[in-house]
Length: 273
Image (cartoon, rainbow, N blue to C red; front, top):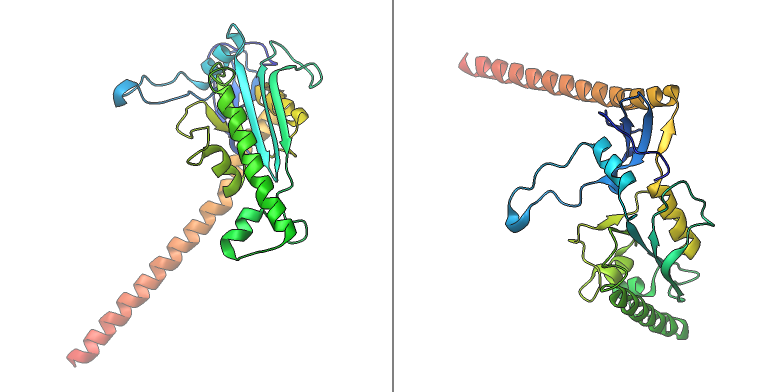
């Protein structure tokens, strides 16, 4: 991680962009943003289904992450639109640039599998209608080849590079890409506690993009006091309209119930006369 190992207690809050990042405060009053998934405990269950001890607080997890020796190994797998990139890195011990981060292993594939004019994967189009053309035949063949190449590669890495990976970051949007990695013949398992989704938007899968993902996820962003105060106020400001809307809905429901009760009473009185 780029930041020095923090110490003492922490106060955690959600980033205004959602729960992807945590706002932490150390004992010296410094505020920092860290990706929640990067320091999240790998599992909350113990062996044989027994309750595992509760994970340490976020700041302690960040300290352990920063001081871990040897440096942990991360794997990144990106798959989208016929483009595939996978790489394994040893995390840098200090701030590093994208150019200085060297992968332990990497492979990239590309196959023509998308319909240029209509858009979308050929396999998705085949599920809704029958298409017979030279282009569709080529795309089907390329999808099968891409699936074989990707699964063969990841399967060959399972006992080696992926076995030593502390975390496996995956971005494979869409049912076709998900099935390629996690389906019946997919080499990865969603139940693996090391598998994490990349919590931000990624570009076309390339070797450079895998290194950008690693550097961004492993960095801790130190904030100025004013920036931290704005982030702490943001959730309250965003919740105010929602609370007001809920209060209006509750008032409307109460008024409707009162009117209905009054009508029922008047109807009962009229019937009795």
